[in-house]
Length: 425
Ligand code: DGY
Image 1 (cartoon, rainbow, N blue to C red):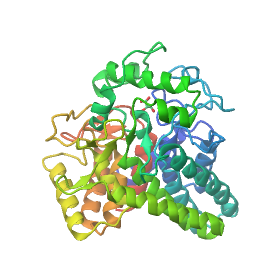
Image 2: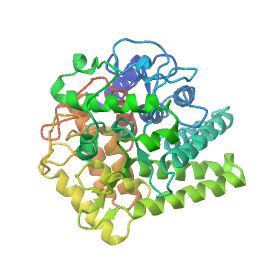
Image 3: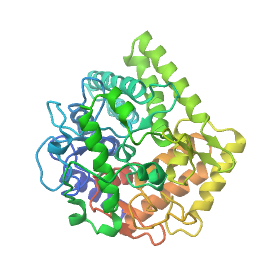
Image 4: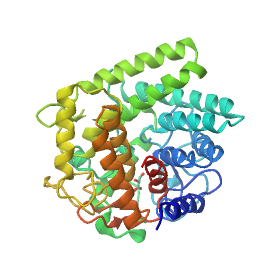
């Protein structure tokens, strides 16, 4: 297909997954609005329909809780093709939602959409950005209060689903401590849509649902959850995305924030930047998350170790170490960057976050490399992502060893990544 036909196909996927101002990640497998999917999708929409890009973020905010949390799923309309649905979460928001969150790409997306609106000269852009800026700021306050109560400068996930990298080898040790018993009956639907060999295992799901049971029993109260959590990881990917989104909000605060907002955002940035910088491990050439229950570094190699580049300026030694390390991960791969490298014992090229390549992760890694002056590698990763999509279609993820498309198809965020990264070629 020509680039133009591919762009039209990407637009068609976004139109097909539109459920009325919000976009499902893909039909049936993910039939609701997902938090970080929607933020990437909004940036994709901003390449051709800025009004619709704002709408995506506005509909996501309909799910924001009074305490500021933006949940990971907003159940705008019922569907029986997904487990666990609203009945399992048992939250009390007026629009039904899940009770956990997801990476706060929202602030990055808001700046992106706002800048597209300025370019296109949209009339109501100011008012829309202003309202969404306030929502984003409230959510960042929630992150620091609820997920860094001890002031580490790192925010924690209490559930692997929050990371977006559900079955990453990074969680193996911490998740193994979580019991497999559940009070909720598990009725997986995902393996009816996608081959089980590409999805998390049943045992993972037992632990995932055990965690949901524990937090529902805490009435979704952040302080009670923090005390009770059997899984608590200060995650460098999450912290980096929050830090980067904080920088983007700082930029927007020049026009839309008060003096106090600007001071507060500057403090947040410093706190997160310092926290992240302490997670650099020279012997691994990447950043590592911290298991707050065992107190140990999580050294398993995963894509998360490179995401801090979106928020930090590396020194020369770090920059050359990271670029060499990413080069090693790309070596021998048909398409990179693998979510787990082939040299790791945990590598499974087709199983979700244990090896496959994700277009939106490549988008973040390329952005981080470019911010750190590694333009050539950034372009190489962007080009190989665009080529992978052109060869295999708008799949959920790709086998790094063959480039085969895997998981769900006609995926919204892959379409968005194509539009944004393709536009940079
Ligand atoms: C799932 O159900 O696969 C999701 O990743 C949870 O958000």
